[in-house]
Amino acid sequence: MADFKALKKCRIQVEEARALQRTGDTAAAVPILEDAVASTPVAAEARVMLAQAVWDAAADDADLKRVESLLVEAVSIAKESKSAPEQAALEKARSKLALLLCQAGRDAEAETLLLEAGFSYRLSDQVLRGVGDPGGADDAAERDRIAAIFDDAFPADMLAMLQEVFKPRGAYWSEHDYHAPERGYFSYIHEIGGAPPRSGVEQVIAHLQRLAAARFPAVRGATKAEWWAHCRPHPSGHQLHFDSDDEGHGGVRNPIATSVMSAPPPAPPRPAPAARRPVLVPTSRAARLRASL
Image (cartoon, rainbow, N blue to C red):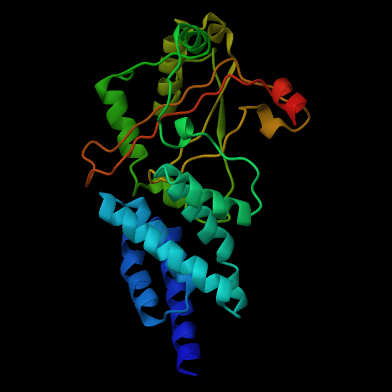
């Protein structure tokens, strides 16, 4: 009975923490999750949520060891639990632990978990850890054919505007309910090439168009620009995808060019390992991938 009461209280705390995370206030959720985990040894879901929160703010190896410990506990609890909510935490706990181990180079341990979960393939060490042969002259030529990198791409006032609009606790995220788990991807489309820019965002689009056209001249003829923004902690990543109109429904219709820009806060509150992961741009084409599946 005592375990049941503790687990019930723990689940109430999990929902309190989840409500805070919906607003982007993960820092306020952490002490609630810490209390939930300390209150009962049979709460897998609380451990998974706390592990992710610690991982999101990890500053050193000690934090990552804490993440691993919480996920190991969560996997064990979920496998042995007779409670459906705790059993349901197994998939997330196992996947997160496998990713953590892959990124630490502990491939044999990760493989056991991945096989248990039914995976047949995983991304390479070069993707997950940034290690391995970066390629020779041929690879560099292919890279330069499809991509261009610009440092200090924005004037100071334009960068300051972007940093203010998209700051982690800014109104943009709360007004879009961005951190809600059920929130899907959303974007905005602007007509370009006619009237002068009417907003700060349209000024950014015009600036990017001029910048990109120096390497990819076809961009000068663009008539529409689509944009979206993300605000995520460093371990969250993003799914691999082809940029396409309407998510590829009705056929893949790629844009003339895609840009990825970063507007980190002017003064980050604390350093984090690998806080700026590289952007992965594969050279594979959709037709080639379909033929190999």
